[in-house]
Image (cartoon, rainbow, N blue to C red; front, side, top):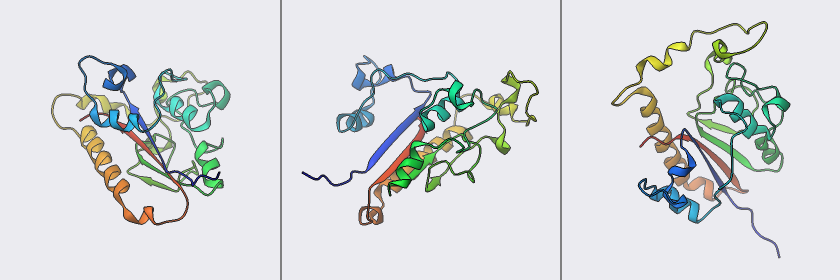
Length: 195
């Protein structure tokens, strides 16, 4: 029996603790849209992050390697495609791979396993948060440390970006041209759950 290739939608939610999904039994939080997707897909109930910090956790997810194996230890040096990702493997198999939203890789020019990046955010100037690094010598520092100073109530450029990512993802998923194109597609939605 032969099965036809399937499209895959992978949703990566930053800063969203898994226990705050109603499908996993949270008594107060209601996530009906995520619950509907989960009911028709796979839910990883016992997953954990290989790193408590953003950039190495993303590199580990891309490569399938722990930070001590890949060398992406901290938020200063981001994933650059030097170690092949699962996206590279899928591309080699003829699967179109699209990312939507924040990747936090080194830059958009690196071959990181995506045919297309929609609204990506990468680390500033290819070098991230060096002030938190334990390195000798430290990489050349950028001046991106002011990002936390604007946190507060109301609409900010950060949650506006999250809403733009959600809108772009919905638009991309509704495009009829993809439904008629040959081969499976994989889309990765990197999204901070904020609305």
